[in-house]
Image 1 (cartoon, rainbow over the protein chains, first blue to last red):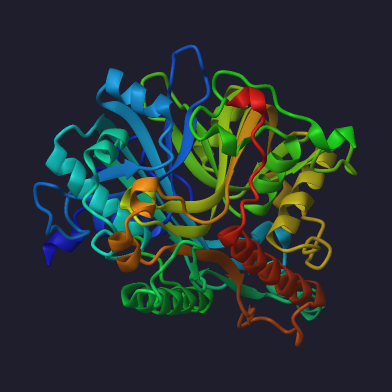
Image 2: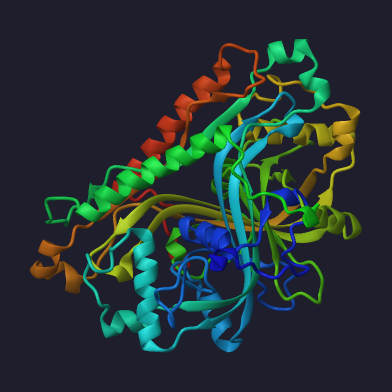
Length: 268
Length: 268
């Protein structure tokens, strides 16, 4: 399956310089991290007079309107929505093709080594660089709204009052980011220490070393006061169970085993 | 306690324009979100030739070297470290006072409303704008390394092999961000729907509505193969228990109750 191996091109702004044995440029790895991280951070420059990038947390999902059956290994666009500042939407309307940087990170464990120097996290992080436009085609907008709603909870679009009313459509801004390039970093496995500490019985007999798995739990659904439906939807109940089991298993596996993409010789 | 009410100034780049009833400018709210979010996203511009901000996930903590006993309501600096790209460190060395944007976000719940239009998350997010320099004073660097290590697990600095060796000190870059301004947004409470859907028995009898609490769990510590200490440190065991209880309680409370800072009249 050669499609599994599609990689983003390595350019100056997406090449991982430090810890590059943890880096991956495959679309599948990067798109999976983006789609499984609930909140993405979107950074962009506003006016030439401000030296600070703006950063906004938003809900976004990778998809392909022209080829909806595409897999995560294919070339995809990012659709974003929710908590959209008027500023970002207006800026994108007035400057179509606005350059944006999208990042997504998840902590999977705490690394407790012998020395503070080697403390840190097991984590997955991805960054994408692309150009944003406001989606104007109603069919594409509807496709994106369904994609994004189903990111919150699978199948939620068809299990809630859809399609949106004309008023809701008009009040919703959806942006599409055409991706230039991107990269991912994944750190897994136990902590690492230097020989000098590993050789010291005094240090090793005093300092506990290991990994503490960290994972997200989707809790017990709480009905709103105005809810009239007795049972929590089956899709939600099943998805919660699976998502919670997967998250715990991944963090516990990452605590003991190096799962990171293997370093290629030429990256050394 | 007037110190609890210190606010960052509202400037063009930090003023929350949308959903501004969720916004807060108090130092305490913003600093608390930064310090309780494991990974921060640091955005900055690299070269004038790249239109894309760079964004890097890093570990950072608010503190004050000149007044170490300061509270989260006081004026503080952000110290960052870990996963520092050579690029960011070098850039800050060659351009002291590099403008950086720091963001931190946590999802606290899924909001399942009657219509997809009103779906979203309960969340806490903060953004800070400031100028970064590389810390060169060894005493301040040591202060910051202790602060950051104790963010991973409380008291870990003194419970591991500290202080760092001269070699470790030389190999570690710590950056200090002097904060210009910042803001926070906090969304809590049940989902909200429009009157037209609330008035429709057909919709309300078909669609389950409510909140699904989301929280992070600090799992069961896993000793590394080279660990010799029998018992997990008491500080870690106690902190895990408390952190897990607090996280679950907050998400469950946020699912049913509006805890967001109250809107000020002039912000309407």
